[in-house]
Image (cartoon, rainbow over all chains, first blue to last red):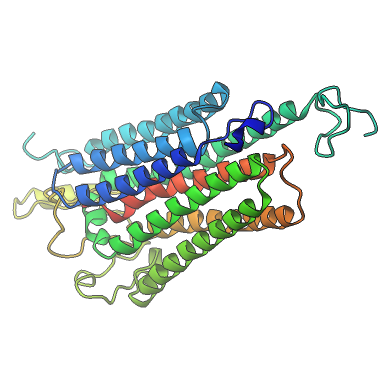
Length: 113
Length: 274
């Protein structure tokens, strides 16, 4: 292959890998569509988010070269994701906690407790 | 500018190398680090909207389950596949640029642009349907589609129910008072969590506000991506890439893939709620 004359330090992703990742992404899109038709209760959301995270990881690792690039780029991205989770998680903890205190006794989930 | 860079082995000056970098590799690394930090800010930018989504869905699951039936899952899925295809052609374009294949690079960038245009076209069809049915944001939510208009939308400016009065009304034991129903209020006590409610819940406009802001901001990112890809295509046709210089293609690729990743999350969160 012509990859031999590539420039210094640049990783060229083989075309086979790119196409395989594309096929995986299309399959996972079908999977998330199929999974949404099965009633799993509150698990549906987590299944969908799990599949989306698998797809996102494929894009990050192969299309965005994170698998071969400097680890520091991955650290920047994953570090940001941790802060996003802290942000959304903090708000969710607050809003669910607040719910039961807005109108004591009449909030959802408070009946029969 | 006249100094020869110590990094170029052959000694001749690399026209793409700025004078303040040691060599082309250091320059490319700096550009890439800057791009990843930009992508981090993009992620934080979108996280505010994901946060709003999570909060309203936690408080009002019935609104999201109800409103979801008006989104076209097939068109959403089609757009997901279109964007995945555009990501493939973009990643392939980066490969072509790294290998100095200019003709392939031009073709692949054009293909990416075509996929992006298809994505916006499908999005336009969806927006048009929403517009026709009055399924819009905030005070513009006036549904006239089968099943959506039963209870009508509460005006977005409705004040939250006054808690003490509701509590007093409950003391006669005739009814369970509803919880506050303002935009940040509470779900009805016995709302089934995973079935489409029999009649439209109140404040459905909240869902459509979130839907339009999230998909709209994403759409703006797609348009911005198309502009920079068109710029790349122009530079490609001028023969500026290849010979070991592919940094702009690489970095625009990173941006384009992030736009894809955001859609990968938006699709199940907005279209596949049930």
